[in-house]
Amino acid sequence: MRLVRPALIASFVLVACLSVAGCVSSAAAGWTFAPPPSATPVPSVSGSAVPSAATSAAPASAATGSAAPSGGAAADVTISASNIAFEQSSVNAPAGKAFTILFDNKDASVPHDVYIKDAGGTQVFAGSIVTGPAQTTYNVPSLAAGTYTFFCSIHSNMTGTMVVQ
Ligand SMILES: [Cu+2]
Image (cartoon, rainbow, N blue to C red; front, top):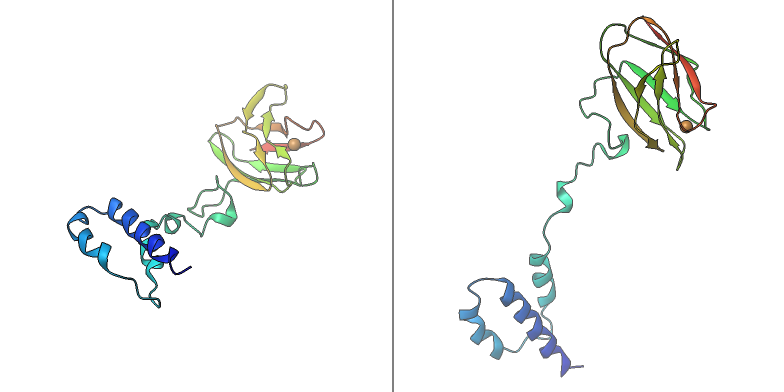
């Protein structure tokens, strides 16, 4: 044990020197010094080598989902899915202007999306798939006033009415 430790510490010093410019000039002195048994040389080496990458993540928005806007502005329409069904049988949306849909997929590991078709069956919007539990905000282009159907393109039983007025 005692014979191994100096070699290990020496190798740590060598690694540290390789990564620090200007260390070479003082390396000669470092080779000869004997590390005291009570010293704690390892933390200083590993501490300087670890970048502080973990602090760059934004913790506040972690619980609200990746695609949700952080501004806190409410969406014009909220649609949620649970147990392979939409929780709203009918929603209202503004006519003649683009609007947003906050889609909340509460079904774990189940993909859903929101499509919209007009009264004639023509598809007017196709939202991207969201695998729950997760939320996203869809940007829907301007629609003329009328009654539309919103539905999930994956589950044919998931439909609802969207009144645009
Ligand atoms: Cu679905």
